[in-house]
Image 1 (tube, rainbow, N blue to C red):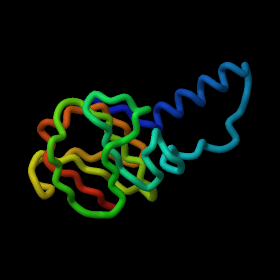
Image 2 (image 1 turned 180 degrees about the horizontal axis):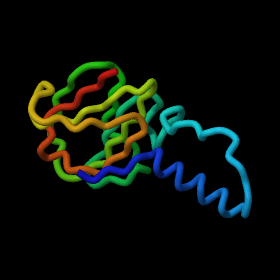
Image 3 (image 1 turned 90 degrees about the vertical axis):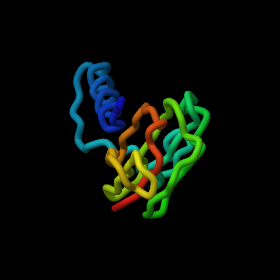
Image 4 (image 1 turned 180 degrees about the vertical axis):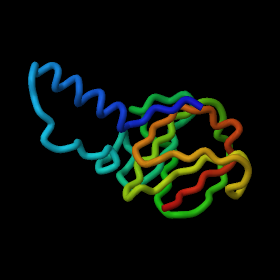
Length: 125
């Protein structure tokens, strides 16, 4: 699975910003991405975009409450973001009802991943 951490993207942007200034000191760590809406994915949610869709199109599915959710018709590559807060996790599982192999997304993770083998997701603290 292809995984890109939002934290890594923000850290890279922050480093580039400091380099562009020539000198500088980061007095405080940057806020996490989950503190704000990310391309239509509300703070506190885990989101799935349509197959092959750009982030700018907005998510087609948003999950906020703890629980297990079965997926239907989610095939091919999608953006999936864990924009939850307080360290909550979003798990992508190969079986229905949270069974099979589960892949854990941590807070602020953004993945471009094939959802064809994924049949359920879990929102968990």
